[in-house]
Structures are given as structure tokens and as C-alpha cells.
Length: 80
Image 1 (cartoon, one colour):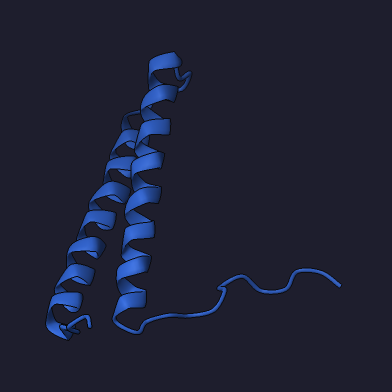
Image 2 (cartoon, one colour; image 1 turned 120 degrees about the vertical axis):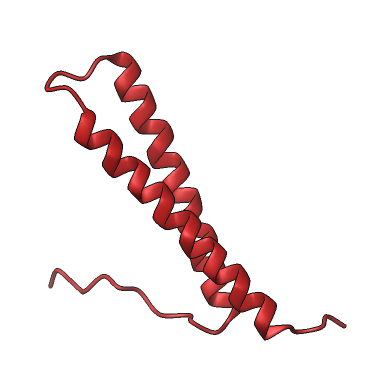
């Protein structure tokens, strides 16, 4: 049987949220210094930063699920 530790789960969520925030801030900092015409290295760096931000977001969402902050889709129906 697995022991449930709400305090540890909450701490994990806080760390995951902080890591996601840091990753998003790194994307913002990159975009602020981006030249008008990005070269191949800038495109590669951007791809790496986005990948990191997406991983951190997934970790944050999983940690939120673990503490009971599960929500349905945030996307509204856009069609028919």
C-alpha cells in the first residue's frame, strides 16, 4: 500500500510550479533579446527552451493532479 503524504505532494507541486515559472521566464528573456532576423542557432535555442517549458508544465500539471487539482479541459467549444 502506498502512503499518502499531502504535505510532500504539495511541496512537489510548489517545486514544479516554480520550475515551470523559471522555464517560462527563460523563454521570455530569450524573446526579449531575439534579433529581428533569427539565425539557425536562435531557432534551435528557442526550440530547446520551448521543450523545457512544456516538460515543466507537464510536471506541474501531474503534481497538481496528485493533490486533487484536476480540472477538465480549459478549451471552450469553438464550433458547431
